[in-house]
Structures are given as C-alpha cells and as structure tokens.
Amino acid sequence: MNMIKSFGDLSKETKIKVSKNPRRMGVIWPTDKKYMEAVIDAVDQGLVKAVLFGPTDIIRQLVAETDVDSFGSDSGTVGFTVNDADSPEKAAREAMKLAADGELDFLLKGDIVTRDFINMMYDDETGFMSGKDLVTHIGMMQTDRYHKLMFITDGAVNCDPDAGKKIQIIQNAASVVKSLGVETPKVALLAAVEAIYPAVPVTMEEAAIAKMSDRGQIKGVVVDGPLSFDVAISEEVAHSKGITNSPVAGDTDIFVPPNMETANGVYKAMVMYAGVSAAAVIYGARVPIATASMVDSSRNILNSITLGAFLTKS
Image (cartoon, rainbow, N blue to C red; front, side):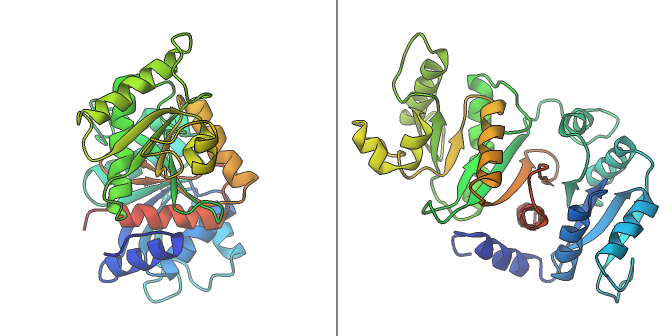
C-alpha cells in the first residue's frame, strides 16, 4: 500500500481493500438528511453494506428526499436494511450488540448525543467493550495550507486526560496514522506556550511525556512538547521563536491539545472557518466508529465512513 496523503488516496485505497468484501456498517439514528446522503453515497461506491437503526418512517422519507430509486434492494442503487427503533438509545444498544457479536464491521454514529453514546459503549449490557479499554476520538483533516494530513485528538471522548491517558491517546492515534503509511508519526503536545513553566502545570506534564519519548518509553512515535499550535504547524514560526532543534515543529502529524475543550474547538474551527476536508473516528473499541459533529457536511461524513471502513480488520 502507498502512503495515504489525501482523502482522495484514502478513498482509492479503501475501495481496493473492500472491493471483494464491502464492510458491514451499522448506522445509528440517521435522522438528519446529511447522514443518509453520505450512507447512500458510500453504498453506491461499494464501500459498505449498511444496516440502519432508527425510525423506519423518517428514514424512508429521508431516502425519498435523496431521489434514490430503490429501498433495501440487493439489485438497486441502494443496498441497505432498516432495523426499526423508537429511540436513539435503543438504536445504539442494538447496533453495539451486533458489532460485539461480530455481525457488523464498524459503526457510524448518527444524530445521537456523543456523551450518551460513549456512556452506552461502556455499559456491560451491550458487551461492546471492556472497562479497561481507552477509546479515543481522532479527527483527520486536509488543507492546502499544510503539507500533510493533520490528526487531532481527543475532541469528544476524554475530557481532561492525565499523563497516563495522554500516552494511551497518543498510541491510539499513532495506530491510525501508521495504518495510513506513516512509519513514525510526529506528535506535538499543545499548550499556550512552547516553554516550560512550573506555574503552568500542563507544560511540565507535556515535557515529561516528551522526555519519555526521547528515552524510548513511548514506542513508534516522536513526541515533542510543550509546543504552541503555531510552532507545531510552522517551521518558520518555530525558528522565529528560537526553536531550531525540534524534530516535530513544523512537521507535526498528530496534534494533542491539553484537554477535550481545546481539541473540540480546534477541530470545529478548522471545519467551519478554514473549510478543511475532515473525517473523524472513535478508535480503540471492539470496532471503529465513524463519527461527525454538527458542523460537518455530508462530504465529511462520507470521509468518516471511508476512514472507518479502511480501519476495519481485513
């Protein structure tokens, strides 16, 4: 496989990977038209076979609004089935149980509150994952203003991770980035400043994690921090601030903000105001979970589906 450097590359490589076996995708509560548009597009491209969990009447209406010729037909444009559910909770629980039983390859989180969804993931009733697992939200972005794909984590799951959780977050994100062909991902631990100040505890924590990376305690990645966002993304800015020996500054793959609020804000700002192409997954559970925020378009949701399909086991 060639290194994936764009969403175009991701689409091409995913189609090759799933060409003989479209992935079984469970779609949870797709009650917004943009989710249905993305699902239909993914099915039409041969990426997935979709099982929709939600209110049948609403789903049928949304399908009708997309001008699709057929509904639930193996031979028509759309190949999907609907499992009727009268609440987002019931839809999520049924989809998670099927995924836990190996009947679905990955999930797409539709119009359901993320925090409620995360709580259900850890519910023993679904059998979806162990309480020992750490799942990570990973955003993937492409813009002409940066020379490579950008990954930001964690914008939706882990609220205020300590050092131990940040290391796990880094490792989850690195697994995704490595699967796209990046041999040794470069990780920037973000803070408001790129200096170490005892009065700013996060800078001390990030410096310690970076030193662990230097000593080989965090395998398969290069980590530096604290770094401000402008230093992490621009070698020119880094040099103007006197940072000339960082292996990460200006060439970052994975951006790790200090908390969920910052990561979430950066992701949404990039999508809403910078107009980047984006995708997002929740990674580290039994199966990948494609996801999107309210600011994402149907095109970005399709990108998330494509990434979810790519990350499934062969």
